[in-house]
Length: 519
Image 1 (cartoon, rainbow, N blue to C red):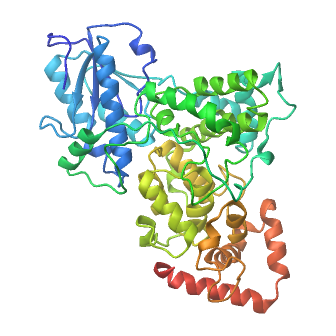
Image 2 (cartoon, rainbow, N blue to C red):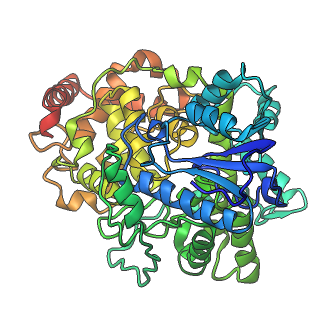
Image 3 (spheres, rainbow, N blue to C red):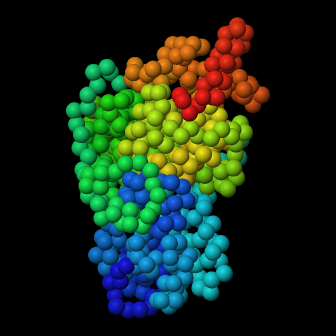
């Protein structure tokens, strides 16, 4: 806890959440000693799902650095450490104490990204005797109201239309009203597998020490999953570190990002990905400043930074990231209950330890436990793909994704997982299920080379589970999916198979499902 001023009363209290570390917010334009800023490390936010230790540590460490910097500039702060006895371990009780302690006359908070927190703050404070006001985080490019207006007269959410709107609004990679290069989207150029001799000749992760934070988490007896080296933390936990990481990414990784953004390998957890998602989602840096620096690099050196690299990166941020946030705000709370396929199978225990013989799953899960990270194709087409074709309960899938990844906050996790990955929303986020067989995994990775299962075997004892479960998924969901034009080719192939082959595939799939813990 820290108070810069000795005064014991404040006109206003401003609450800052752990993912609202925006130094450039208008709140901080001037010093006002009548305002008390409050930050809280609380168990209620650390245990609603079992989080990765790097996620809890990273958020607390970033909060402490933010508090230290902003209080050093002269803003008055009251900071709840996770271990302090005075900490009631939830927002409402801590706020109630501070209202009495400092004779607070008004409360402000920035709109939480997560629906759950929006409702807690709205419902629990609405009957208080003092005004409680909610303001913008000033982080996103498109507001929820603007998003609703954009889709008001459209039959469905299509990201491509929204992405073009965002490009026009920001002016990124635009010549007047037209996209630079004559195309909006260069995704077709961004699906290359890494070469056999791939070796990344750079590795610049600025390690920081977070041992004090880690010790506090252990002393607070918070449960967690995963691994951490508290003396060499890999993730940017301040605006300065995030900007340094952005500069390094642009110089070294951006020239290859687009081409290989979907590639997967045992050799490298991060490949050419930026490692900026945690800093972005905690609002240490703004999406527009990131994209503008990337665009500036392209304009200065278009031979080094070809258009498909730059456009692919910018699309992920101002297109997909803003798009899924808009859907989350528009469709909650109903979205969280959707289960289009009625899936109820529990996650196998090896999702929590990686002890499976499927090499792709083993590697993706082990990597996630080690780093709190896997890139979007590992999440979508490995761990998510298996959960989809095996019929896993989307509630359990959501909890796993929300807990294991350092950049996972519900607004971005839920729409990506329950929506795009599991198609549990029936097509709100994506227009088709992202189911894939071993052929896709082999095309985009080196995982299949060392696997005990045979990627070419469709029915035998060593048949890749992805192969048989892929067809089992389409067979058992015919009633729901046959009318979807985007998967009509799969049913055309299935219909042409001989009955004996179909039965053999389904028999092997049912065997694997009955022995799923042993895969």
